[in-house]
Image (tube, rainbow, N blue to C red):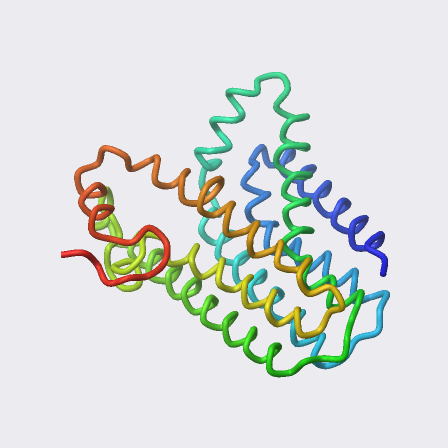
Length: 254
């Protein structure tokens, strides 16, 4: 088992994204390129190893997710100013902005991609004879997560395009049951991938580092906290927060 080629390919890809961001003067490039980073690291692993139709099916799951995510973020950010998070860092980091951007945004994101992609990489690089019931169950879990993320994003994007929604909180559709159904869906997808990969790899437990990591990041670091902080103190938000589950979809409180 060798991770050398996937790691090198991912490092080159993240470095290229960094160069593009300098030219564009927009670190939102990292967001657009995030999903495609999984394609790069997994494709590099496939290129130097034998594979089966089941292995390729597992690899297709993050490919479908990554392409959808990249297209969505590109369309959402096209022609707009740099995201407020990156603007704040640009001001706070001052003369160290370029160096810190490379290490704290692009290389750190590359490390996250490598760790989150771990179950797929293990299934490709250290395969076992497939245990089909586990693989099939994992794919079903992934499909459930994909539904929540894709539908949640679609509903949110449609809401934001409506001029009447400006300044208001999205509370309909899946957002009636969770304040972050798309993040919930992303977490569930990686749990599904880890479950499916555990039926293919000789190192099943190591792969579960992936969903633990992505769930932790979404709940406590880069997902929920950053978005909810923007709305703190807004009466409409506080009422919505009081009655709606923060992550796992549940019936709203009365």
